[in-house]
Picture 1 (cartoon, rainbow, N blue to C red):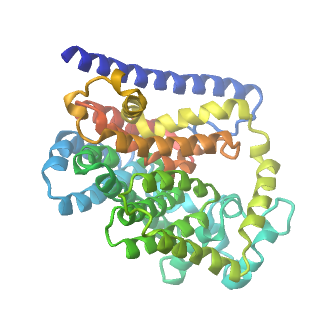
Picture 2 (cartoon, rainbow, N blue to C red):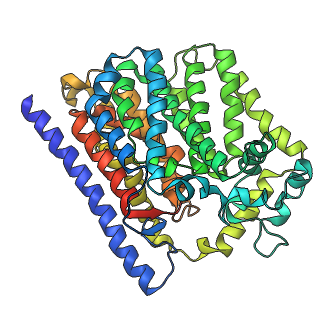
Picture 3 (cartoon, rainbow, N blue to C red):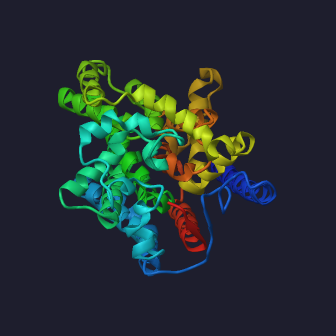
Length: 459
């Protein structure tokens, strides 16, 4: 038995090493391609950013949070009551994300992130192009293509209008400007960790959820969750799945089913790519209880609300997506080489989820393979695997599948360190399968700290 444990640990380390080699290869090959052809449009391949070692106001706080979570996170996750654990996870994830963002300083790290020429606030100030929201929605598709008059900045054109409307509505209630937008994205985005914990608990048991908690808090993904609108999108999608999980396991199925449908509908109007959340939603549905179909009418009813509202207001989702594909290939998307990004995107994913998640995914795959093997050849489970590992394994592998579909589509070439946050968050709980969590938490924290101190990321 001891030999089996040592062999599993060696395999975990091998998986992490292979992932590190993938990142190194992507960096070297990317450097060569960018300096030879200039077709990647990234300064720190495979990441969008550029080399710039620095420290900042958030350095001390980020190191302190990392040390505290490594030292006390696993113990507190095991001992706190569930009601106290959830706000503790949210609060610590928020502080961790803000600390990492503030390594770049308040202005660059938070207040100006969403005000650049690519971002959503460009259409709010100095000229408010959404002063008449219904008119802006009716006219939205006329400004997507690059050659159209007053074409939208890249992120407005690249997303359905609910993304931009979020910041328009914040501005309307007096929370305008980049600072409030950044604070919104961080505080809401950090709730995604809570949503994932709730989902893991109801589908795979509280023991695994508690073991996953420190890894959800100390995720390298926080480097990009910080003041990126995709962090906010990830939270909305995470709560949609959490509510669906509650519904299909009998927790107020009508109310939670309806709420899940409303948020699932909203995700499709925040980002076109979030339609792939349906892959994870299918896994949640399959992992539900025997009465899992009971809330589906309420979920489907909720799912229609947001699309109906936007359609009645004049926005055509399918036409907008068709035009977006055209614009994507008019710009950098048509130049960036698919042959590089189809695997280099996966290197970006390694940097989002960290080595612990890679090792955990290896164990998740092994758990699924054991379940698929004929009964007569199944190995006896190790003591630490007697908890319902296959259910969590199915959930994290569904997230990986959604990410791979996005990768193969060709519509995600570069910048996936932020674009794939809604999928990557669901792979983080795979680290719950690992023994010796503190050692793996150190690796996660070191990766995040190195990324934010060595690079000036673009998002």
